[in-house]
Image (tube, rainbow, N blue to C red; front, side, top):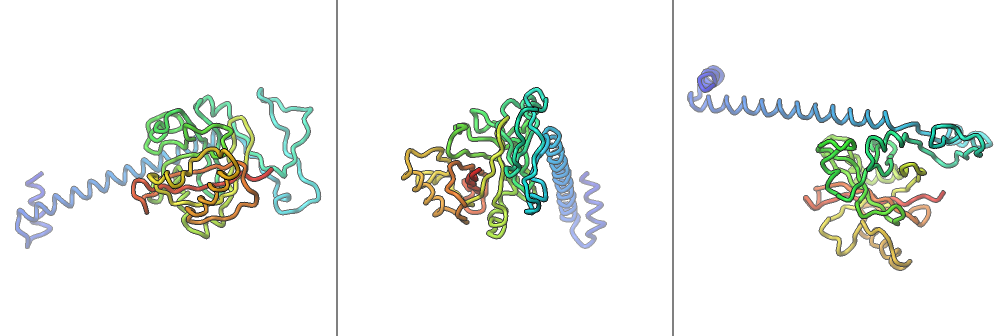
Length: 295
C-alpha cells in the first residue's frame, strides 16, 4: 500500500517530494473511502426510512374524510360516511349515519396492537411526512433508540411522555429531529420556525387507540431551553384552577417564537417536542403547542 501510494504520488504530483506526495495520496484515498462509507450509510438510512413508512401505511387502515363537495361548500345537505364497524369487523346496521361535519380517521388498531402493545394512538400532520403511530412506556428513553417494532434503530419512534395520563389537559409527544434534509420522525417540525409556514399549517390530528379522532389547532412554536423548566414548563399536564391555567397560557405567549390566538380557549392541548440545537445547543428544543378544537 505504501509503495503503491508512493508511485501514485510520483505520478500525480511529479514536482512534489516523494514522501509528501505519498502522504497526500493516502489522505485523498482515505477521504474518498470515508465519503463512500458515508454515502452508503445515507442510502441505507433513506431505504430504512422509506421501508418503515411503507410498513406504517400497510397497517394504517382507511382514512375517511369529508367529501370534496362538502369541503368546498357545495351541496345543500351534509354527506354521510360509511357505517362504522364493530370490534368483530361487522358493519352495524342499527346505528345512525355519522354526520361528516366531523373529520374521522380509521386505523387498523388490531394490527397495530399486534405489532406493538405500547401503541397509544396515531398522529397526523397534513402536508408533512408525520403520519404514524405513537407509542409509550414507563421509560422515556426506550423509544429514543427503538422503532415501532421494538427494533434497535437510531430514528426511534414518536412516544408519549411516560407521566402523561389519557385525561390530562396537556399531553406531550416526543420524537427525534434527524437533521439535514431528512423528513423522518419530527424533522418536519423545524419548518414551523418560519412564520409563513406556521400560519399556513395550523391543523393536526390525533386519534386515540380504538378511539376518536380529535382535530387540533396549532397555537404556538417555541424555542425552548430544556434547563429552563423553572420559569415555564411546556410539559405541565394539569392546572389546579383557572388562575393557574391563565398564567400558563400567558407564559406560553411570552416564550413563543410565533403565537396565534386559537378560535376557542382549548380544554385540551397536544404538545410536540423535538431537538433543535440552533439556539440552546444540546438543551435546545422546538415545541409545537396545539389546542383541541371544539366539536
